[in-house]
Length: 234
Image (cartoon, rainbow, N blue to C red; front, side, top):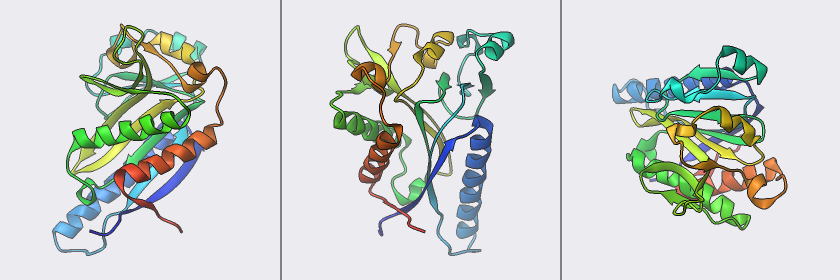
């Protein structure tokens, strides 16, 4: 099998709904192309995308989530200049905002492996390896998704949340990685429905803000190494 090529796009600071609509467009286009291929109507292979961005303050609730885990009413959202969306990924509630690195892989896993649990572990591993580049040891917590600092202790704190959707082995949604995040926004939710563990960021762990573009470039390459793809050069 040839090495898959992935289109990389840095969307910058982008409204959550705008990014969601763009994901949906790419996601649907990929699925439609898979159907055409299977019907013998096309021999053009599906394409893959890796979208990097940040969002203005927003809370999103996954399809298995509980709105009670949002602790703000409509006025509270306005007071904190935040928006709220109920969306079609897995998982419960989470927060996105400036300083958080958000990654949306839109991959046709038929070109990689057809195993969503393995896919999630690969995403986590790319983040774990990125943190290691900055001297931060991290890992997983049994039964929970995402990446954690001191995850096997009473001081466990989550540094990266994950939630994905897949259909016909095409993925969307993805990673919320706290680099320089304003962690006070997490106090207005029960993150991922987990009320007994803290949330952290690279800035909090290292005591100073990070160069977000630099961290983004490290994670970009760790994802390519983990999945064994190359970035498409226009």
